[in-house]
Image 1 (cartoon, helix red, strand yellow):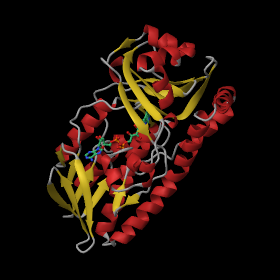
Image 2 (image 1 turned 180 degrees about the vertical axis):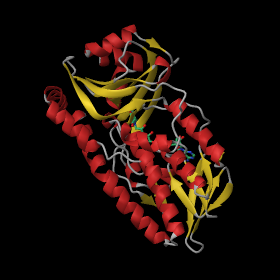
Image 3 (image 1 turned 45 degrees about the vertical axis):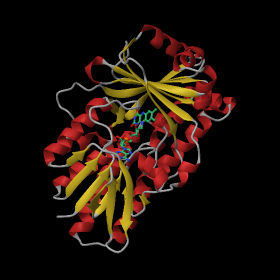
Length: 373
Ligand SMILES: Cc1cc2nc3c(=O)[nH]c(=O)nc-3n(C[C@H](O)[C@H](O)[C@H](O)COP(=O)(O)OP(=O)(O)OC[C@H]3O[C@@H](n4cnc5c(N)ncnc54)[C@H](O)[C@@H]3O)c2cc1C
């Protein structure tokens, strides 16, 4: 198959799509603006729905003893806790290690990875192909996969609707060393946000929280915000005061948006967060990114083999993407809305989940998908 594919963005969605397409005989060029390895704001808990697939495709490092996570511990602001077992569960691995490993695998298969920022993507109506502009030069492609994450300058250039709405969420992440059981992911709530903690490789833990921007403004610095707001939950106060912090300063991102997006934009097939981002507390954004990378590559392979038109490809992708992900994104948005709504709604939501295993289990089931092979 001699089609030229350009993948814009080398997170999980883009790397998985590029590897699979290159393996199937396409020529893939992947543009990533940063240089691997690098840290990202992410809780680094991966749902097991993608574990068999990653194993089968040899897309997980085998030399690391990755923690297997099957217990969810929830705590309310007042520190009340509940635990439930996760039917499917997941595992922990840092994005620093995982993305770097996948990028190396991609190169081994022959994907050309270029570390540069794409600043424009043009669809040529006449030739039915794409011109991708990078640093003043144009790259031609038969197909472009847009996997440039939750928010990119390209979204503004493409005039995507969600860019008109400001998003009030800020994400903060640390790697720490602390006493935390390997089999548990804890979700500790505080007024105005929630903080996840779970283990990754080399005996480290990831501590990652999402908070309303106004709280950060009010308390002026991350350190003051943590002392004044997160420490109200005694579990968090204990972790912060006893852990060894491994970064000089935290990784942070802002303008995290959960607005609806489109799986096809400017004739491009969008994958991962670029097609829609699920609320982080659902713990399966990475699994969805991997799954959509698989879906987009499977359909491009099928369309090329069977000589289906581009319209067929776009329609099938939209249909299958919506079947797999739209419902989960809706549930995620609803949970996010209640947790970050008024103080009473967030207290009610947390106390319902903490006091009712049935509700907590229901939420986990509604936001997770089928296991993929
Ligand atoms: C606070 C927080 C906690 C989270 N915790 C979890 C968790 O515990 N478990 C989980 O499953 N999910 C979690 N998620 C979600 C998860 O991180 C994302 O869903 C996942 O990273 C999406 O992968 P992606 O490949 O779509 O995008 P990304 O991983 O964001 O990759 C996009 C890439 O595109 C690149 N890029 C952007 N623009 C350009 C351009 N113009 N040119 C070239 N490159 C470009 C970026 O540099 C980036 O590397 C969390 C998210 C947040 C915000």
